[in-house]
Image 1 (spheres, helix red, strand yellow):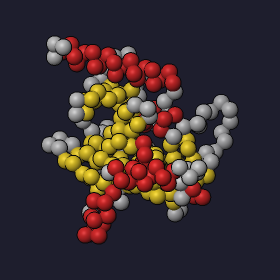
Image 2 (cartoon, one colour):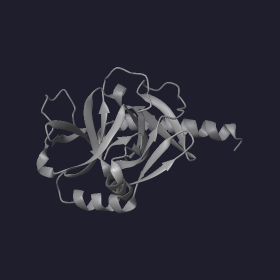
Image 3 (tube, helix red, strand yellow):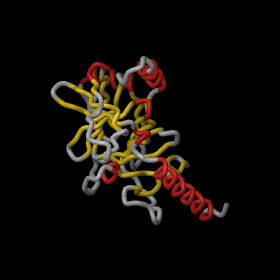
Image 4 (cartoon, helix red, strand yellow):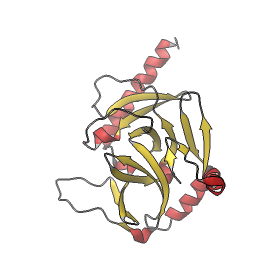
Amino acid sequence: MDLVCGVPEKHGDAGMRQQKDELFIRKGPHMATTLLSEPHRGTALMETAAGDHGGKYLTFKLANEEYGLEILKVREINGMMDITAVPQMPPYMKGVINLRGKVIPVIDLRLKFGFMEIEHTEQTCIIVVDVGQDIGIIVDTVSEVLDIKGESIEPPPQVGKAVDNSFILGMGKVGDSVKILLNIARVLTEEEMLDLNDATGSAQANELAEVGV
């Protein structure tokens, strides 16, 4: 199943039936949102409870590399929207968004991984993920949902003690390609999460002050 910022591409009637089974699509005036259906979230939970990393992964691209994250961690997928900048934050912490009344911090995964910043396009997406709290991650484009078997996932490469790759869950082999599977909860350190929480708290306080609460 192919996705473009939350909107599956059409592949005939059979493809559309399968897509409707797996995703619930809701279109707004300025963005498209994909919400995971609850039955499939439950199915994914049973699949990943078996003790390996096999299961369903949402795949996406950053700088021509393919990444994946566990579907259970994905809340929804949005097109780009207005991001309110928060002062004195690292460059990869882009600010916060107001998602149906909830303030959510947003990071640019390109910058966090040390890639060059690029202009956003119609394919740029914000994936809202659950890392103990909801955060948004900006990616170049969302690709598809893949079911990757445990035996097709190898441990991350050993690159020396000086390099922390604990945020890499494994390397998923899919056909002739390899997907870098992320442990999204470990992409940010504990200290970085505290900074993110401070930024979110400041943005919420400012919003309440503006409405006179």
